[in-house]
Figure 1 (cartoon, rainbow, N blue to C red):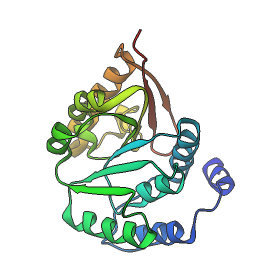
Figure 2 (cartoon, rainbow, N blue to C red):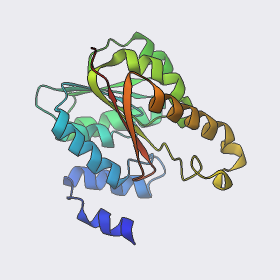
Figure 3 (cartoon, rainbow, N blue to C red):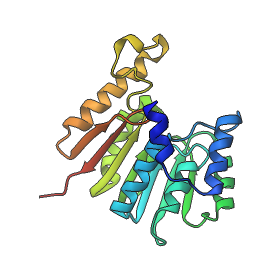
Length: 212
């Protein structure tokens, strides 16, 4: 299959990240992590942008934060938000074991509440949290993101349900509606330039326009 071929081309990650991916697939205490195609896009964007400050919304067990730390300048900083204590605790342990406890700060709490008091100045935002809340997070993300900064939103096609009405599961109707609202907003917001990329579970790549 095409996806298997593309996955086979992606460079091997560190032994530590490889083990985290294995645990995510096998252990119930581990949350799902970013798909490989999306992971490679993140690495590519970081190499292009070289951000000094990164915000991640949705830490899970720390895989993406560690991946980003592996590919950022030495003086960069990552702030990552996780709502579930179980996952936040695992992430803190993983980040410490990876040697990035000074580079990555984990904030446990509801993203909508944490975003309100964060200071701005982020060059890169990776949004991979509760899909139905993306639209609620956006005003604060826009406040926190520097002009020229990148917003990468994951899982925006949500297992195909966002693009295909026939695939929508009844209990996911509200989430799908909110994701569609979010996509309409970021595609038409005059402060953003956005492209939807159908890799992984779908990503939206947005750049905050420079002030004129």
